[in-house]
Length: 113
Image 1: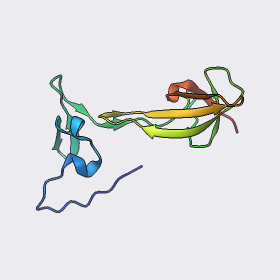
Image 2: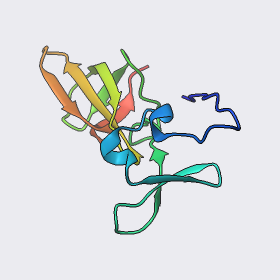
Image 3: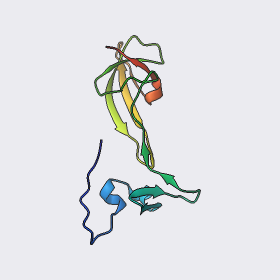
């Protein structure tokens, strides 16, 4: 997923242009075409995980998966990215009994094809 931002040469890029919130943005700088975060403990670069199961299968909205809880199948009903320099996906899924659970990519073993 890429977000293209049109920035004119006469204006400096703002963290707000990239969807970075004020709490995180005040500790950021744009250097060599990369956003860098430093909250006093050193520089870290913005990164985003790729939503994959433990075995490498791609995690997708409405997909069916086997989870670490031993369910026969679970269906992803929501995926959202956390904010901050280290963005990870938070998932909400429904198992075959209708129970709703939340967690992260490491809760999924494999896709059901």
